[in-house]
Length: 524
Ligand code: ADP
Image 1 (tube, rainbow, N blue to C red):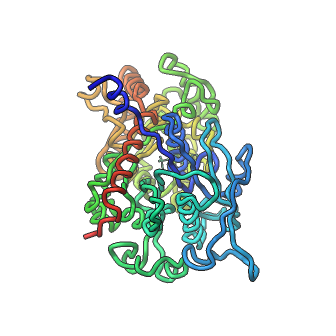
Image 2 (tube, helix red, strand yellow):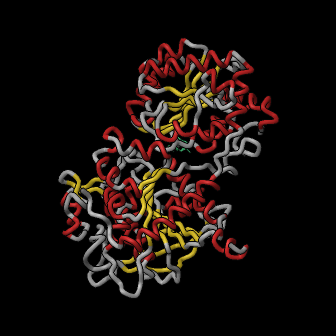
């Protein structure tokens, strides 16, 4: 083959990509989805892709945009999907939304925000300030899907058409469903990719809500949207998208089992030729101990001795005694069942008898929060908690802790273990999902061949977590071993570059599948 031809073959594709999400850091984030929605588009932009991110214009998102401009107005239909949305209208008034444009901070990635009164509420993307979910979240995210399709089919006067629409989690689950109803002879629909960040959130609503959304009646069958007499947004994404993926290879396998598939393992197994796992990366600029502005003292693999200054700062922040030689365990998480917080609580008495301190940042389940608080009253010198969300403190916890706890029941990818590895903080994790794919256990063999990076335990049990913490505290006594674990972890490569390349391949496959199959294959 001549060199010129070879070069053409190797040339990377260049796509227009519409990335649709309910979260986008730093505008709106409750967890990993917000991080991924920001760092993956940036990495794709660096690979010369034309990517635009579409999110609702929550008031707290608009507030954080340095500059923002109106670029389009989209009228909503008088009947049909997305239903009447509870938006107030005067007789004869045309219901519409505005598209506002801004940029992702520190990048040239364009962000489109959908401005509508239905998003104009304080709290989180999903709930009010007291954590009560909005009852009309189906309507709110149906609107996100509707607008994504209007943009995708060139009906938004934005003079830009995507080759691929990439939807994320249930909030974007209807995009494939709607695009398959498009039958224009002159214009092909874009290909669709659907990423599962967490199978546990499925967007399940009743028949009444299905009717109120004015979804086409023929979709109500168990091959398509119906799910045990209700209907599910995520099922729409899984059935109708050209390609489906999740955020780690192990989780892609796990969700095909009954335990992790939440009633959809059969469908996922049926579609497994079009299902894959791509590991999340991390934003290497934002999570860099050598330059992190949120921590007390910057450090790198070459100046590890400086790390302890962050430990002192963290102990002071939490009013824990400044003990240099006590193993300080950090935990930053949504305090919910998924994260195994109840399992950690099971053996808390025994854990706190070990030479350890624990610093926790998080919020979530009120009962778990109050049970954790009880321990801080009983053992204030050993365990402290800060309830709420605090981006800056989460960085200090990564830098200042000796080890990081992630006793998750399941973890699609997990980001904190990756931040921990980069910060020389030893992750203590359950062997599940992305945790299994990214942390290597400190066995004798792995220590001697320099691959060990953390402590990995198998069973989802309180006593196993206790054993793992016990092992950590023993290893911590041996400076050489501990240092080795830190260095091995810090040498790992979890940038987005390689994962973004895999997403590019996935887009190419999705486009091929769209052309090959035209319509989704019937399930079963
Ligand atoms: P999940 O998406 O299931 O919540 P991940 O580990 O994938 O879990 O991502 C969680 C992200 O949210 C991490 O960046 C973590 O640091 C952050 N985070 C979670 N809770 C808090 C909190 N209370 N304050 C600050 N950051 C938080």
